[in-house]
Structure formats: C-alpha cells, structure tokens
Image (cartoon, rainbow, N blue to C red; front, side):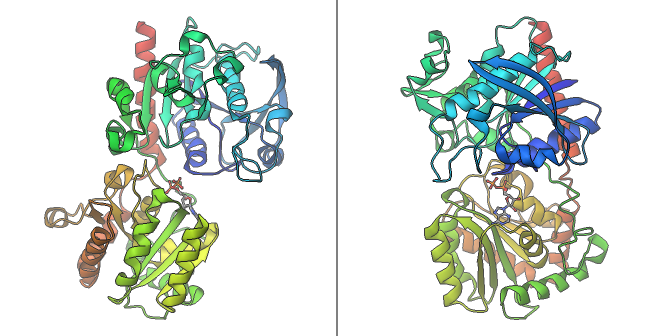
Length: 486
Ligand code: ADP
C-alpha cells in the first residue's frame, strides 16, 4: 500500500511526546512489511537543522492559502521511508517547540500553521504538486492534521482516510471566527462537523470525516466513549463506535533492550536476569540511595503533570518507603510538583531520590536498576514506560486504565497460576489504592521464585512494532475496502 502519514512531530527530527516516537517507528515498521509510507511534517527550524545532517533536497514549490511553500525531502535514520518537510518560513521557522513560543504560550496562529499542513497533505494526496505519486491511504494523527479527512472527503476517487487519536486531551480548539480565517465552508459550522460548544474543533474533523478512527490502546478506545474520559466528545465517539478501535503502540527494540543497552552498568536478558542487580547497585550509588540490594526499589519516570497522577505518588511515597523501600524519581514539568518531590527527597535521605529534568540515559538506568515501576496515571492512552519496564524485568504497578490495563496483567491468583501475570493493577485513583497494590508487589517480591516468574513473563511479552504494524495494515485494508465499495 502507498500511505501518506501526516504528523506534527517525528523523532528524531523533533519531539515533545509519544506522537513523535510513533510517527517514526510505525512508518518504519510498515515499510519493512513492504508498504511505501511517506511522511509529511512542517519544516520547523530545529527539524530542518536535524534533517540537514541526513540530506535534504527540494522536490516541489507551490502556493497554498496565499503562502509560498517548498516541499523538501529527507529521510529518517535506519529507515527507507521518505520524509517530506513542508517549508514555510513565516509559519515554521521559529525556535524550539512546534506549538509554543519561548514564553510557553501557544502560538496565536496555530490554527493557520496546522491548517496549512492539512491543506498541503490534501494537495499531495491528489498529486497536485506534480510529484507523480498518489497515496491509497492518508493517515493523519491528532488535532494538528485532523482537517485532512474533511478536506479530502469530496475528492473522487479518493484515498482511504484514517485518523489516530494519540491523546484526546488535546483537541485544537479555536475561536469561532477561525472558520472564516481558514476559509472553510460555512456548512461545517455545525455540531455534527467542526463546532464544539461555540468553538472550532480541529479534532472533530478527524473523528467525523475519517473512514476509520483509532486510538493507541483498545481500553482507551472504549474509555473515551464514556463521559469520564471523553472530554465532551464521548457522544460523538459512541456515534462513531462502528469505525473506532484501538491498536497498542510498540516499543523500539533497538533503543529499549536490556541485552544491548549501552547506558547500563551491566547488560542482561531472560537467561542472565541475575545481572540486573548490578544495575540496582549502580543506580543506588548514582542517586545517593542507601546501598542495599535487599530493599525493594520503586521508580517513576515521566512528565510531572496531573495526567500522570503525581499527587497520588506524593501522597503515597512517605508511607511506602517506611516498609522499608526506596524510590527513584525522574521527571520534569510543573514547578509545584518538582518542588514537592525535591522536598520529599530531602525529608527521606537515602530512601527517596529525585532528579528534575529530562535525561534519556538516566531513564534507561532507572528502568534497569529498579525492582518495581509505578505508573499511577489518571488516564493513559497507551503509555510507554510500563512497556519499557516489562522489557527490563521491572515489575509495573499501574492504575488500570487505557494502555496500562491492556499491557500489564494483574497478579491475581489465577494469572499467577497460569503464568500470564506480569504486574499489579489498582482500580481507583487514590493513594490508598496505589499503596495497597504496592504492598501486594512487596509481598510477592519477598518470594524470589514467584518474583522471577513475574519478571520473565513481562520480559517475554511481544511489545514489538511489528505486531502493531500488522494491526495498522489490517486497519488500512478495511478502510480501503470500504472506500473502493463506496
Ligand atoms: P507521554 O507521551 O504521555 O509523556 P509515555 O509513557 O507514552 O507518556 O511516553 C513518555 C516517554 O518520555 C517515555 O519514553 C519516557 O521514558 C520519556 N520521559 C518522560 N519524562 C522523562 C524524563 N524526565 N527523562 C527522560 N525520559 C522521560
């Protein structure tokens, strides 16, 4: 299949979150399965700088929405996919983050910036830039490219339109007057199209007009159809239930594999699990935790934002480390959370360590050195850290939502007996529930043979992008079959 994959971030060209990882790994895995997947992303200043090392050439110029644009072609490392960068300096030649200025505020012209991306994708889908390539499937991702299915719906013949929701919390909401500013037909100003409580919603265009809508885990796909997780879109998502499903993300095996991870004090695998303890000793030393192999070491890595359940962590940690246990925490985000974690670490020297900031190598060492990984997210579309933890034999304790519920198998007596258990669930987002699950983990940790079985079960799970890409292949094929029949 020929696929145009549209995204606002692609690792390693630019990244603010999980979308960038998916936008590199999924097209790469699909290409390996024999498909031709071309990516499209804005040529942000930093992305262009990163791409220049990989080689960039001009392949087309055009005027879109009155803007003169250039289409540049580059590649991704270790992949055969083409990457097209939409170059429009007035909109994209800006420092830093794709969405916000240095002051931390969203750019005031984000609607125009990402509408241009969507218009370019629609033109490329019809080969209107004269490149000599027409995709059969156009796959857009999150609100920034959600207008693509709307812009292509009346084209005949038209490609199959797939839209993926990576996080429903971000919807691309703009004032009503944006409709005219973007020169979108007035007929779309309707609750069944772009209108959302008096605002213009980009994400609704993807949900309403795509042939297939998916999210990044089956559980999240069903959760967002409920008011508690639906951000006001649950009704629309229930209406689209027949074309809505969930496909779990994979993890990058080259970057996250304890047998080959260059960041570790000692590499290990399923047959050399005993070597994991050298990583625990090294981590305790690095973070100033008491050197004690027998004390269970809990870890947390992530953005310090409400979604990640930081308040639950803060409330539970003092009690948890009394057991005794230790905790290693790495994260950056809201200042209040950083301050509270720093204060907690200061109050429990040798027991709780906190490092503020984004540190990829330390994240690897924590995954390898810890015994238990805590993930108390209030909601989690898929989540990566629990999958890294499974891979590293670091048993996850998770709030059973979204992708956490789909990847972590709770250590119930039945699951322990049949060997499928690989972690622990808690069902309500309270510190008490988190503590109760952590205590179940501590109890099992005291039984080395049972713990080892839990670790091995997680390490052997198939978390590959290959599995995930096969599911997308089927999704594309079913969307294509419908489009051909229409
Ligand atoms: P989200 O995309 O919501 O932030 P995920 O669990 O899907 O959450 O992905 C988070 C990714 O970012 C993981 O690869 C995680 O290891 C990484 N990460 C988050 N915060 C940090 C940090 N402070 N240092 C290093 N890596 C981090």
